[in-house]
Image (cartoon, rainbow, N blue to C red; front, side, top):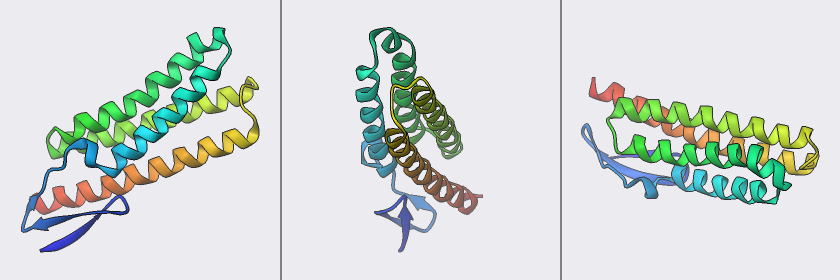
Length: 142
């Protein structure tokens, strides 16, 4: 039995070529994405009314897409899960762009942007680590 590190600090047991399937809510990347989504939602709700209907909606929508696509990927085939994780990284980039827009429009200050960048970077790093794990699993199965 070999221990495989799963997007820090979770571990799961791997026997031969069989991977124990986790419920998406148990995945550390899902938990991190959910926290990120809640932070962006809180920011979106604090925007001026006019921007809440524009930028705020887009922030909420793209941050929700991250958790939704991670949940979908976990319930799919290995190749589909890999694709979903890659897509989640794209949505994370989209949310970061919205944070930059919020900064440019002076809805958040530089310190807030720095925090959002840090949270985004951590999330992308976790998803990337999980992608490495999934790709290794795929190579073992071929």
